[in-house]
Length: 409
Image 1: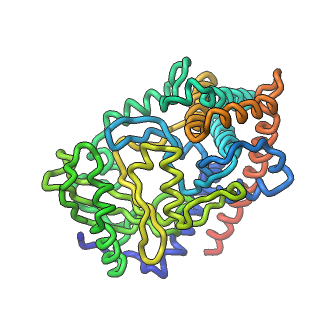
Image 2: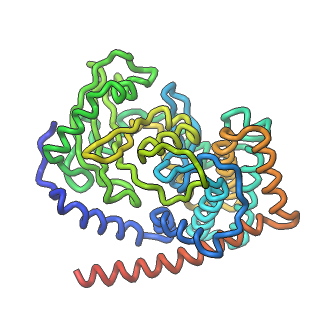
């Protein structure tokens, strides 16, 4: 593995990562919402969070905000907009995903300086898209589009994803497409035990099978760890074990698809509440993989669960086509189309897990709770309004504490 300059010791990492997380969450209200998953579920436990419609227990994302939706590639090279982060997945109430997505859309609308009435219309469109996905006709397939045209932001994201190659992924993630991870601000060098356990993990047949699953690779190709580093990445995950592992598959070069980057992330207990009596895997990583395969098949087929340093971890190869969906500076019309489309994406992820009767009864329950004449169901609108106010106050307090802590330091 590549030689690295000095990096923080394991004992020093925690304080540094916590400071980075606090700084990221102070950047904007939208960034705070993305990083404050636990606060969302604290709200659910209050009186304001009760009285929601109760859908059939299915795997839910558990953290269904805009940053967790985007283009995802399958092992066969197909690309779709799917849920792309399942750390919080549980078998639970699908209404929780709708409220979380609604909160994220509302925060994005505020960040784009859209009128307040636009938020109500976006939530209405989100629910219309979700309803469409629950219909028997659409639930039979996996295409998240309907008669409406894909929003421009989605078309552009899919077009960009289709044109991306290893060099794009390498330049974004590890700066240089050469087979080496540069140590510094984003990557820290490993300790001896970390390096040894990672090599053992990637020597397993199951992990080798994950890497060779892409149709462009030979099933019998050798897999070699070329480099690895501790990865300072994300927001809510800062402080957990996180590693970037650079692999060579076969004997080719970057142009032959021989190099790949695998994200190894510690899985922890979900903050999202599960449905009473839900039967889920005991190991946290197994739960994440099971939820991914139910909600986002393209992603789930490329993930594996494992153990590292006595902890449960999820392994996922990062493909160039996997991207976040950028939702900044939208027009009113584009915001409406995007909300409808993303509601359908989440609806299809839920609907593919439901039998016909369950889809019909869940759709009927949502209809019953959505009187005609309202822009959005009252339970959804009141929940999002309350959550926006709660998170705005919490965000401002977070910023105040962040500044005070920085001054004291």
